[in-house]
Length: 379
Picture 1: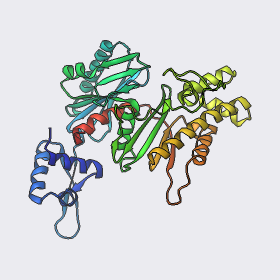
Picture 2: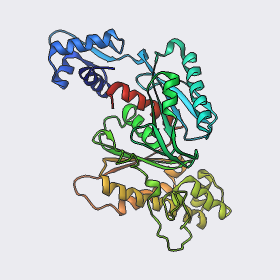
Picture 3: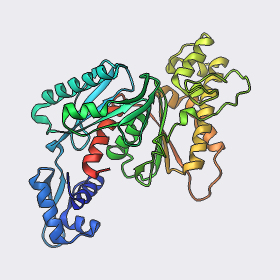
């Protein structure tokens, strides 16, 4: 869609924000004449726009920025039911969104997504440019080519391709991605981690535990696209203890069976305790031994998994997204303490652990970011 030189310009502006032509020459190493031609073409195509004047020594410079309304992108999250479709502009701002019923039948799913996107584009009207691409966040194992879902326990899918039919129907590029990978790419492109070249993200949600890694500024996929499956890390040895529960993957002792919301609710229900994070943390604060045991077990297992992740990847930051009561209560405190206890001491630096709240539209925004990233960076 763009030349290699134009992609370099777009990548620079997307990363740094509005810059002058002189700064672009210094950053990219391209000549002034080449840069002038490249930026003129992008201005003519309405992808770039001229911003404010900057005064300094010599002639004032005009900053160039991305034209947010030149194109829009659709993001689909199938992480929850109902699922979410939204439109974003070129800067990741949400233009419109809607919910739709999640369907396990692939054909029904394709029809729901197509109809929802067309409705949102019509609803957006002049507030959005033409549709430039679609990203779909799927709770499951997605191939490196971002087309085939090898397996999704939630959707009961095996070797399902909804990308090819949607591309034919919509006439734009479509990309499927594991939901955790989608979320971290949206954070890296649009969020507060956009300047961080190495970080990991763990999501403790209703659908289980997800994980993804940005390494050297890019998503780390692994050999078959399965990097980040921390939920199936063995944290409890199969020795018959009470936490040795069977996992959906067929193994026992996985992190998902101890630290996921589903597992915590199950343990609380067995003890006759409230199953919401807020009430369970309240019970623990009031000294309920069963509540304390459940949250210590769940937080400790998560802290151990995070410590192993830090030892393996050495990220500058680990972001854990979870419900506020867990973040501020026993679960979060035990997680942090366990992680710090089991990391090899390093005198000159340490990995920052950031516990944050999950955002309902984060997966869909991240999915839209996949299509945006492909549009801007061709990657």
